[in-house]
Length: 606
Image (tube, rainbow, N blue to C red; front, top):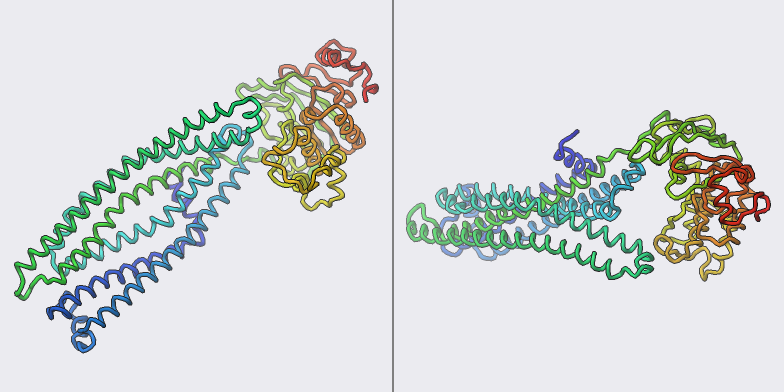
């Protein structure tokens, strides 16, 4: 496995593919902007020494010779003012185009990262999402990506800028006066050490603050998602207390970070100003000692060294911010790679796409478990013929939902084989398999979109007539038409504006729209009344023979007309047969039927 640093580098470089030239161009623009900036200091020094005092300025011989040859123009304040304006404009222009290129590159990188993360989250196994917080995933895919983007946008070119400014200023000062150059850098080692110590000390606290933010995001997401439960049980105060506790922890960690940053910036400010003061004091001393000599340290040199010291000190001081932001970006990249390191769902077999999904479904000695090999389903064997309706009955936790989830290969079987049309499902491409199995869950998920968009989700190209037909089969068409906006009614997040029964019926219509040869109702009529239940069963009866239908329910009236009824108890298949056959047997099915006062012959149930 790659080291974390290698993974982080690979993630960033891959996301920057196609934008690296912008960063290279930005680096060139940084150098040009710095040269223009330093030229302004030289122009001011030249004005003080040559134009104002008539002394030789600290310029290269070739440049000074050129200027003296045109002294009628160059030995004027107008010339110096124009040069200052020119170099300031150049510095501003190169700074602008540099920031534009970096911004374009960083935004494109962030988009690619989000695309990669979203694609990968859709490719990981279903079980991955069962063991990780949704709020934490959202925080990683938004805040952590933005942290990396900000580092690339704000700090990456700052590293180039610091190096160029430091090297250029150092060379310039050494060429003018080596002794003064050393004095002008006396505090830089202290600033550098302080920056590195600050970075090493503060990095772990950035991780803690990020984790606290993730916990806070999770709490908000869970509260808003479960708003009905919170209100129904009067848990607003308890949820508020939980949020307040997490918020206080997040605030505490961020305040501690801000305190550390305040100590660093105030301390580095003091050292930086001390360095400027030292440069100014020693500059005046050198000026007084050498004034009137051939190698005099001029007034222009004092200004030049103070200016260069300022531009030398602050970049080094910025190392702390850069290293701190690098620490935050590293933590964020580690968190992003934790997602990307999760293995994508693999095809366990041949990944066949052209298979018969309309044939018999066979379970052969199937076992499944989360913690133990067979703690959920134990040695399940049965065959369902094409066109049959299969009902599944069992107490809570008996393995009903797990059984149908195995058919979609949301979980792998521990042992045994499931076949559709004679082909083991492990040999069927998972997209092909799931496209041919439509499922309606007991707690259906509806998107915060219109009812029309929710029903047409699996087939956006479907006509309105097809949508009306499946809505009528789901006994929800008349209900929808009573809304002011009809099918264009926007349902709230997770369908919160609809009742439980209405949500289930819209989800049933969506599944029918898929027109899959295998249809699964996982206790998906539990929230509808008996009259509506009967209407939906009548519609399903008309579809009999078009495909295999699995019905999971606790209502015997919903199950009794099925061709085959499976009874699960403690993960084992304890009974199998028709309603009439099972009513003749002493077992769970008959006990539940007697409790619900269901007639012995299934045909008598309407």
